[in-house]
Length: 173
Image (tube, rainbow, N blue to C red; front, top):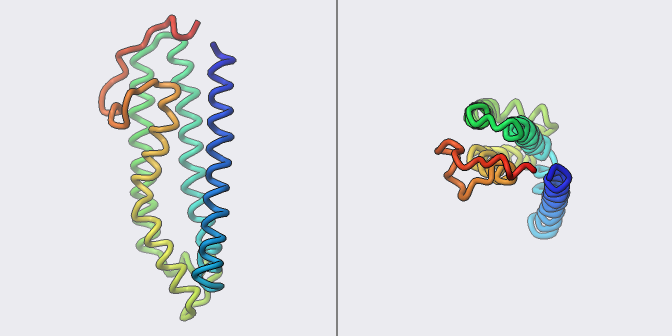
């Protein structure tokens, strides 16, 4: 069973990474082809911020999968529920803190990323960051819940509101 779960996780993570890279490639092609050089520069400057949020989401997802898998192996529903709930709280705090920080410090962040104040690239970078960050909370939590459906075997996206009650130890054998 562990080999099967590991194989599922590896395949899922590889496909996920390939999908992200494909999306970044398509974004780059579309922006460069249709919006121009300044838009491409703004997109490139803002990408590190996107990657920080994506990296944190992946880190949380992987960590919670390990902890919950160990708890499932022990049949410890309370630990599963507690770590799942705690990780949701941590993701929400990180998401809202990131939202606030980027919205409050957009100008200094654009300067830090390399955009020169008063230029078109600066304006586009600022617009891109502000547009992206508004949906970060929903995106991080959606990705997190989707990634954890493998381990927690939750039937739908809103099931994280209910404790995991359907655990059967025979699933791990």
